[in-house]
Image (cartoon, rainbow, N blue to C red; front, side, top):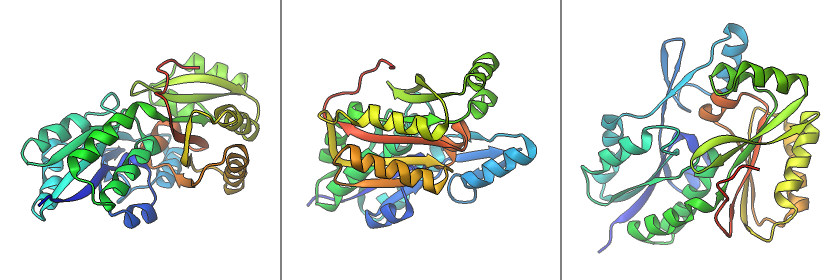
Length: 290
């Protein structure tokens, strides 16, 4: 008799509380350090606190992976209940969470770890697919093999309004940040080969650049899996988010459009006023930036 399967994930996948509960997905929170105080992502710190603290003190948080002991304890809780586990992590090129999870999994039978090669709802898309397979009675190894094969097909990108957070976090130079601000450039951050890079640089007001971004991404939807799309944002104005949602619905016939708030990881790296449209393609995503 096969074991019942539970899907687990780290806290970077930015899925809503409602989705997590509906699909019985369990979460391992990653660490957030802000001014020498340690927090657990999504448990005792949220993005709005990060923005407020930065505005008042000029300090950005640092993110940290779950260590092997923490992951081992997390897995043990479910193994002791008789579950097989399929666990999802942020890209191994962005964090040591994947490697620590693999080491922890070696202590147990039937614990499978997937490096999503992504972050945010790029990870979340895979987590949801896996949870739906588990709900339908699929075995852990089949879920692992099926979802692992989907990893190269996830298209994840975000347009950011300001390079301030990326600059302060050491992810772009002062010159690049100054040039972008002077020219009113809104860079598109794309996940390629497990790493974040700068793709197209849009120019103009943020609301207009988002509309251009959506149309460029979705107008030719022949190579897109239209079953689901995420609009994931970091503290954008609700009216702007609704305008983007309406434009996505108008541009491509997705069966399901999910709107989520980005958690602490994306927020700490990119700052407020960041928005992305994320989906799965029918063919592998190019490793080259636009």
